[in-house]
Length: 379
Image (tube, rainbow, N blue to C red; front, side):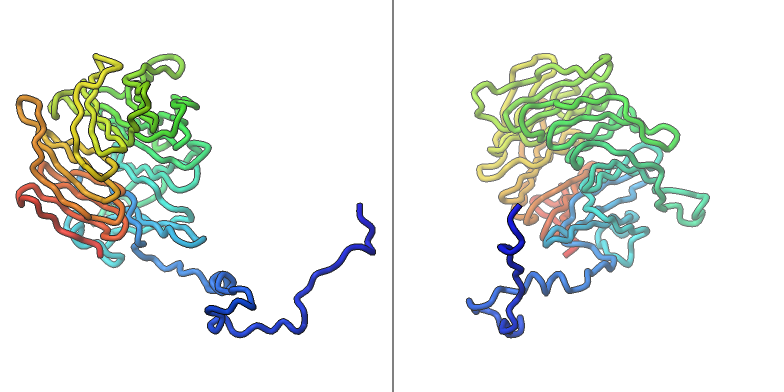
């Protein structure tokens, strides 16, 4: 312990009288007080569609939920909104059926069974909300109230998928590779399957099939893809593909249904070089085909709809839609570039309409009837 007589108390000198903050531009004699000024300003907590549109979901009744976030500065927060089908082309704060502000950003929204909305905020929770209630509002049952919430992972949820075969079940994951399967029982969330370390590298993709609720596929940035089976007593997986040469870096995954593309045994994996790889779960450790989609772009998301495969990219943000013919060969029939500053999510609203959201140009509607054309919304 140093003696007290050697200690000094540092104070702002009385002769330190800097000019006003607005006159400090280019002044090297005094510190920049802009950060202090920003902290002194009151936060704008009004309800608004923030500039980052991060996720969108659609229900069986064609009702949409949109998650928007404020992602700049030190104050990050989000909101999610509900819209009927008639208002999806022009989403505003005023015409939203419901709106809810969150203390955290809202990373993902996905619909489960019985109009239950699963929400992954920017903390470690998973939330379940009901979006329809004839009891609370019989005239317009599109309504929002919370059912349950649970601590999901040790970091925010980065991926979530609901099983089409059993919409009361879903699987979630975070970037560290922590996996959990959930069931929605009596309006509550219950975890029944947990794998703490699913991959040795950064977790990048998750896909669920349409014919079973016990299997799913994951992938990571080191070129490894794994097939999981939840029927085992403990977390169990087999290697679907592993790139020993470390030349591939998977970014996303999608699993076809029996009537889609080449059938229910095929998994589609996007990579960092703009390619889509096709793997057959019956033939592990081998890629059946590689499709080059973008020369300059990272495949960010894959969405399958019947005979159509939508491939989204970032750097730059673009979308391509391929139609798979009877011989299994894809034919690109739609291309649109620079649709957003950064593409974040996409859904098929019907058999020929794809809706993408992102940062910057917030939403774009891509219609296959009009070749190579799209409609921008939400600016």
